[in-house]
Length: 283
Image (cartoon, rainbow, N blue to C red; front, side, top):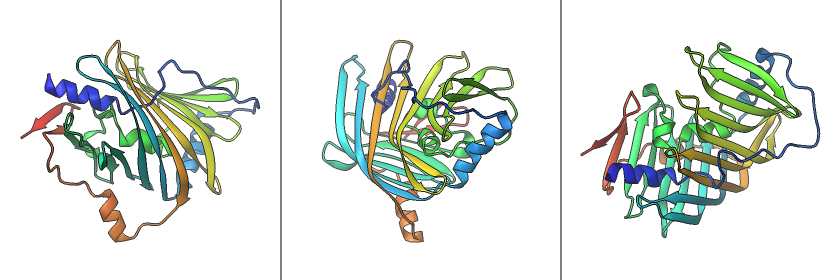
């Protein structure tokens, strides 16, 4: 029960918006991409133009504890991003400047939550899958929100269009939908991504808004919303509003400080995400 409790609470660090929330469609309509290849090429171009960033902001979170009681929090966050796979989001919760830390590098990803009533640490390796549906506060979702969309090949992708949006749909080898990406046709920014489980049910939604131009051909969302389904009847959410987003550079020393997985000291619970996406508590 304790493991289930801390995972459910961790799930709450996700966006203040439901899976059924609607995209506010822009007024202007533009022709969509003519092919899957053309659409994916534009997304790849965005990924290639991503630059290192740092920002401050605030996070609004909603979660439910093991007794079903609803909690709301609002706290400051700091954010660092060194493409393609180094990211760190740090939240000041309960007067602890590292009350929540979400991070990743080229090899690993991790999440730590320090408040006493939770006090848990999760980690895993990219080679063993990211398993965001278990981690819930996912570096993978944050990376994709910034434009690092993993497109290894064009197999199993299809393209459709609804009004101002191109919709890219990815299926697995069993022809099950695993992801839908909604892209605004006029500037080809991603506005929403839906993630599906093996039963074709939505398990997470990322919504992006208020893009700011950081460099040529690179726009970054200043509002990132993520909703995750905990179970059939409960959703958890968080909303990050980034301010003072600035291009930056990282020295070797600063990269080691921000993007090296910290040792899990002082946590009541330590969890390893296994190759099969099982959550295994470590002693």
